Length: 173
Image 1: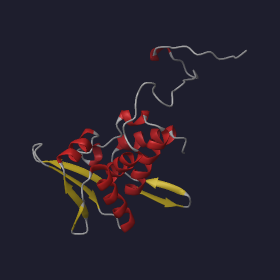
Image 2: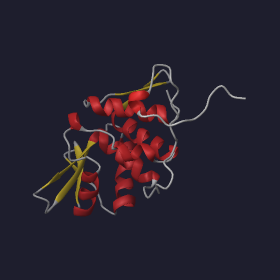
Image 3: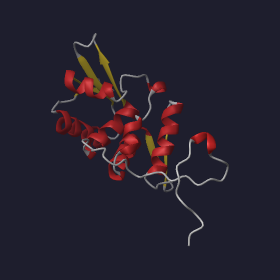
Image 4: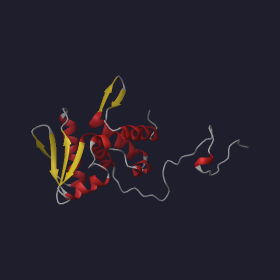
């Protein structure tokens, strides 16, 4: 005999100390995103941006890392995911032109200024490994590892809040 039972209540009827059950996945929602795309999306949330010339052309950009292996990883991911070749600009950033890639990345909010970026709600329903890849991509962009602790610095308050939820959703602290 259990002292708990599951029942549905409207939010306004919840009381302090009520336990809430949250599903790890949403039944019936299919995942069509690859882990590579999620890693790239996380990286672009940190160091990337897209700009459009009235929707006719799209420029996809990311800031160059001081670590060449990071730059190479994401140049390769852009090639694998979108089939585009990122080119360096004055050793400060990388860019490519692609309407398809630009529109896809814009649909995930990457046409926003850094202070307005957030993690799209749909990404929280992805499998755990996909969410981990997104976090790792953001860590590659804006993170550092010191004394076995990862720190991620971003300017968007909403992105910080979303990231905290995502980190907890995968079982990390």
